[in-house]
Image: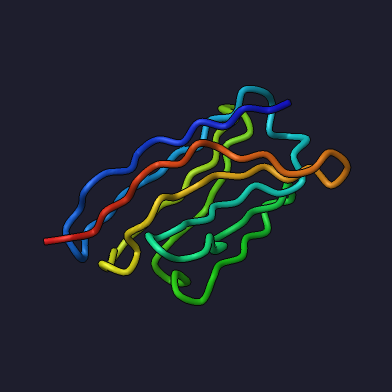
Length: 116
């Protein structure tokens, strides 16, 4: 099964930017959809963005226009570029890989904290 490792989280001031990376242990070419979710303290995990293997992207309304998801099949990596960060973006961010026939796999998460 594929293993996913997120990186790039950290502490950033409001209005700042971060780029998260999700490195897969095998080719992502065959993964139907890759996505990012986040979970803030005391809240349920929520979907942030996704990209299918055709390159079509979708975003949650709360991040649309600020976040950009992309995938590099050659590097087996998916990225989440986060701009104009707000304190409410503070959460653990998780990468996931969705195979329509095999199910969904998750990374271990990376902490993003937006604070002055």
